[in-house]
Image: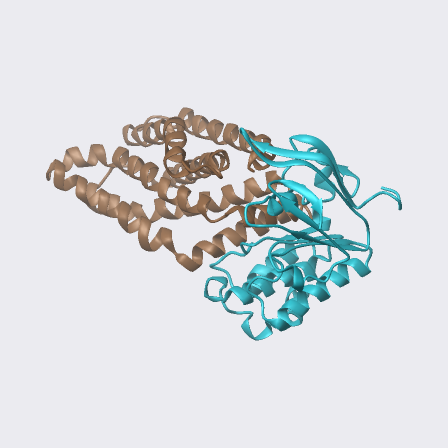
Length: 222
Length: 214
C-alpha cells in the first residue's frame, strides 16, 4: 500500500471517529465562542478597543481551545490501537501525517466556527478578507503538526494531559506571532508576505520534524 | 530464515523497565506448525512475552529473532505485517462500528473491504456489523478481534487471554483460528488462565518473569 494511501486511511479513520462524537463542533467550539463573548463583558463596550483587540484575542482562544482538540485527538489511540497500527506495518511517517492532517482539519473547523462570533462581537477590520482564508489554514496546519508531535512525545505518559499543553503553547508562539502580525498588517494595508513566509516556514519545519521523529517516537513507547 | 530455524526465538531475552525486571533470561523457541500455551498468574509477565514476540518490545538483555528478524533492529518492520496479536484489551475504535473497524484493518493491509465483511460473517457477527464497538459486548469485541486475525492470515498468532469472555462457540473459533494458522505453517501462542481449556502442543509457564516448561 502506498504511503499516501496509508495517510488517507488514517485521516479518514480519525475524522470518522471525530464525526461520531462531533466534540469539536458541539463542545469545543461553543466553549471557545463563550470565551470570546465573555471578554467584551470584562472589557466593556468600547467598540474601537474591541475592534483592535479582537484578532489577537481570537488567536489566543484558538490556541488555548485548540489544545482541547489536540488532547482529545491524541487520546483516541490507546496502546492496543497503537500496537494494531504498528503491526499492520504502517509507515510511522504516514501515521503522523494522517493524524496531523485530521487534527489540522478539526482546528480549521474550529477557527471557522469562531469567525462569525469574532465579527459580530468585535467587528475587526481585516482589510482584505481573502488573505484570511490563507492565514487560517496555515495556523491550523501548524497547530495540527505541533499537537501531533507533542501527542507522540507524551504518549503513554501519566502526565500527558498537563505535559502536552506545556509543550504546545510555548512552541506555538511563532504561529501566534505570524497570525496576529499578518492580520495587523492587513488592517494597516502593509504587506503580509513576511508573516506568511514565517507561518509557512514554521509549518514546514514542524512537518519535517514530525516525519523524522515519527518512527523513534513510535518505537520509544513501551 | 531456513526451514530448520525457529519461527521465533527468545535467547536469554530479558526486559527491564527502569529498575524493574519484567522478564529474566527467557528461552523460548517456536517452530512452524506449533501451538504453545503460555500459563501463569496475573502480573507474571505473559503479556510482556507476547509483546516481545510481536516485536513491539525489544529485549533489553539477551536477544531474539522473529521470522528471521532480530528483535530491536529495523528488520522487524519487514515481518510485523505477518504477526497478529489479540491483546486482552480490544484494538478497536469504540466510536466506529465493527464493520468499520475491520474494514479499516482490511484496507490498511491492502485487502478489499469485502474480506472484512466475510471475516465478520465467519465469526458470527454479520448481524451486528453495524453496531459500534462501544455498544458491543466483550464477547462480540473478542469475536471482532478474531475476525482481524482471519483477515490478516498471520504466520504468527499471539492471543492474550485467549478464552476470556467467550462462550463455547467462540472458544471453538479460537481453536479453529489457531489450527488454521498452524496448518499454513505458522505458529500460535495462546495465553490463558485456564490450562484445561487450552488445546496446544506444549505449554510454558511464566512465573515472576521466568519461563519454565509446564
